Image (cartoon, rainbow, N blue to C red; front, side):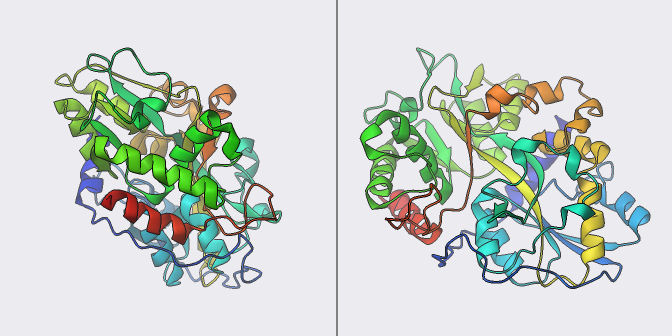
Length: 391
């Protein structure tokens, strides 16, 4: 819990910069996406807080310094607070690698910022979970652009005392006349539109939604309208651990989207009412982060050394426990200090994984295979999210 609280503090101090991406590009990259740098003994890492700890948050939490000693790569770390911020910073070409979530990765590929990964140079690649490799959020046209790092589901958490009967569907958060008005919470990001689309895909079959990240005009409008309907019931949108955990602990929030690590934090707080978190009957959205190498990197050797280091079993175990996520390298499950950790986070649970729709950057080219319509690109999602929150 001390590790989780420290990470919460980092997130709480971040300035959330929501920068709309104006690209409506398809998922095809602008260039071949290759990096020519051979390595100069330096490495600049762009990462989510908790992914590249160097002792600055806690002297006892440091997997960057051992990497420097082993590799000879002098390393700097820059953290970001949102996927939109990560996309913008990676686009500058100042960073060699980035830990990209699925709602930004395809934008970096389409923008020509992400290099094709030479998996032969990734010594851990064979050990990484197959269900995370060569997927829609980290590959394009058979080319690999991202090496899996870790993942987690977007769960439905509820106060067991206040919310009765216990919910089994996402309909509990989208109900128009909710008995929990003002105490419902939702993730503060344009990608949350996919949660509404996933729900509609199971409850409004006539819309024909088969991929919640691939929405035509009619499908997109339906999801946006559902979120506008939800808006009056929202007590608070969240984008960091602290806000949601505090809300559930104090009882100002009783129902909404969460991550496993937040649920663990609420349950560990003796002042908190009892909570539970589930995968509803419709399934859930989820996030999977991947390491990507910049096409502008002049430090490619060090970039691959870092990827090999951060995806090795022992380091994956440290990061997964500190951050609160399932590791991509399943060998890490034997090296976690909590021997039940991978069970808690469903790291090897295929039945759990099969219920998830992982974040993937929406593009104008429909990701569900349709070619007779144009789908809404991420810039459209961003504009709609601003409208939803302002409604």
